[in-house]
Amino acid sequence: MRLSLARSLHSKLGAPSTATRVAIASSSNYSTLLPSQNRGTTPAHHHSITMPSSSRKYTTYSQLPSEHQMVYEMCRKFAEEELMPNAGKWDQKHEFPTEAVDKLAELGLMGINCSSDHNGSELDALSYAIAMEEISRGCASVGVIMSAHNSLYLYPIDAFGSDDLKERYISPYTGHERDENGRLNIGCFGLSEPGNGSDAGAASTTAKEDGDEWIINGTKAWITNAHEASAAIVFATTDKSTKHKGISAFVVPMNAPGFSLGAKEDKLGIRASSTSNLIMENVR
Image 1 (cartoon, rainbow, N blue to C red):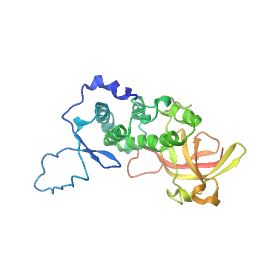
Image 2: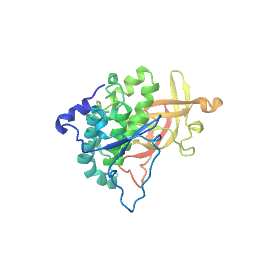
Image 3: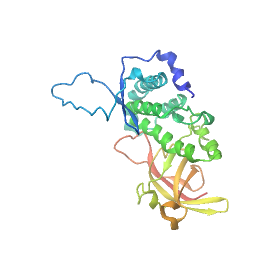
Image 4: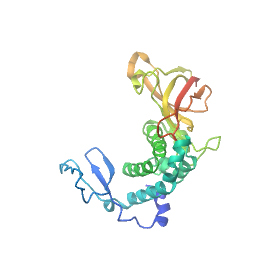
């Protein structure tokens, strides 16, 4: 396990503070972090809720393994010092937080679950949950940028991609390399379509085999990170006769001929994260 992201700040932060507490709500299938502020007393005008002891168990912050405490302290400090003071400005200006995302990469958070063989931090799911909660607390847009990149782009390639795909589309995307324009390599995930929403089985985007290549045509809608991404995972129909079993996922470089972007959506919130259409016309 590579813990440079946490250890790099441990000397700056000192030992994790035992005064800060979090609670972990657990079941057989998941663990999530919940703030435990004001859990000691309940004001008279609030209603208390007693949960069955068998359905939820709580663990204090000090009971977390030291590695997770370090990740928590690091991300909390980063959110309070780097994100909170700027989140409102980024949102109002519809401005991508370039410097903040670059710093996330330096901390190892833009490849937090990926193997060290592909320049990832190789931390576990609990570390990711802790990091996501604290980063999102500081700025929802940065949290969305980070989660779409890690969960929707990196994870599918890491879990299902070939060694060649991992080398080409994970290793340069974990915060250590930049594209031809000097931007950090970020990925996006193209599933939703204007007429089908997120129904993958109804994908109208098509991919037709042509020798050793595939030709992709179609439009993907509401894609997070679209205007900053260097590569996209794109779902397309390869065999209509087999219905939902004829859907395939492709990793497509965004600079491929025929690949273009729609206008940025003018959203009500989370505006520092770009959202737009991916348009593919005979993309190979």
